[in-house]
Amino acid sequence: MATKAENIVTLVALAEKLGRQVDTTGTAAEVAQRVAEWQEEADGLDGTGTEPVDDGEPVGTDSESAQQPAAISPSEHDGMVLVKLLMSVHLAGAYAADGVTKVDIGTAGQQVRIPESLVEPLHREKVIA
Image 1 (cartoon, helix red, strand yellow):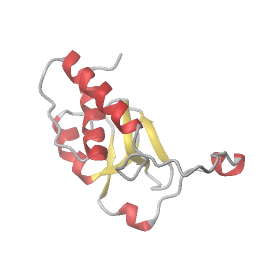
Image 2 (cartoon, helix red, strand yellow; image 1 turned 30 degrees about the vertical axis):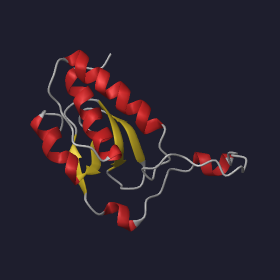
Image 3 (cartoon, one colour; image 1 turned 180 degrees about the horizontal axis):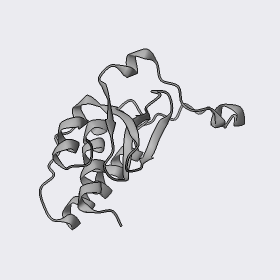
Image 4 (spheres, one colour; image 1 turned 90 degrees about the horizontal axis):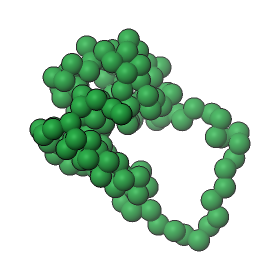
């Protein structure tokens, strides 16, 4: 079970993904419930902020491309800030210090790139240095 601080980190990342204002007030249980609801909503998005569209084409996996780290374009570096994590957290939209490899779980002491909009709330919650 995630701590309230870890859930706030996740909530801030989900707010960024869903384009919402984040409310980090409330009990740990209330924040956890908000995370669960927003995560379910975010899981239904296709990555562009819209509901997925079924075009009738079968979806397959290419084992070669599935093993390669997700590369980001130079435009995705805009607004990314290199920070040091002070605790292990679940991250959405973060990249390793190399700026290429996506990071879902960050560990204490690890350097990651996160969207600039997340820096202030995560620093305030003492999640990053």
